[in-house]
Amino acid sequence: MNAGLARGISPLIREVVTAGKWAVRRSFCGGLRPSDNAIVSATPSLNCDRHTSRPSAMRTNSGFTLIEVMITVAIVAILAAIALPSYSEYVQRARITEATSALSDMRNKMEQYFQDNRTWTPGGGITQPCNAGTVAPLPTSQNFTFTCDTLAANTYRIVATGNAGSTMYGFEFTVNQFNQRVTTAAPAGWIRPPNCWALKRDGSC
Image (cartoon, rainbow, N blue to C red; front, side, top):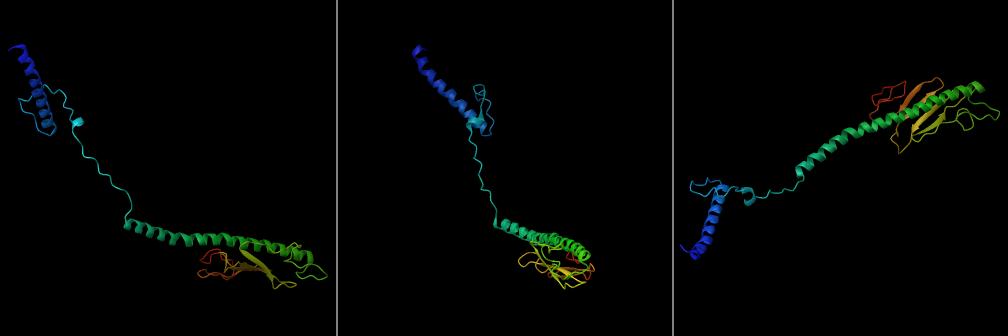
């Protein structure tokens, strides 16, 4: 064989070898074992991962279904129905203490006034209690209005009335010269004890 023929055959041989290598690569990567006569030695590294295409992962949109939203709304409504009344009662109980503390303090001042004047209705131009400028002025509060009724020489009664428009509307507490503490009015659902100030819905004092 002369040199020119060898040069012509060499490219053809290279093409055949190359085609054989790719055939082996495709067969092996596709899950088929190469035959015994395949040119395995010519393909030291098949590197299938680099030449095989992978199906792209499907992207799903995250969100809430209508049923999930409805369940969430129902749970929130149940929690609100339980929590709001409890919170409202907690606020009322805290503000009741505001009224009862002021009444107790006012009673002490009324006793001091009586010791100074020997009466709660002195004459001679002396200012009666429950007025500014005396030792027993009426207390002030954002949630209650305090009044002094049945004021006489030897008797008095201090009244704390819940202000309209506040959470204390409907409450009324009184104290007199005998230190008798009475819940004279309370909102619906509250029990009014006969001889004390109701501090809780069940009438506890």
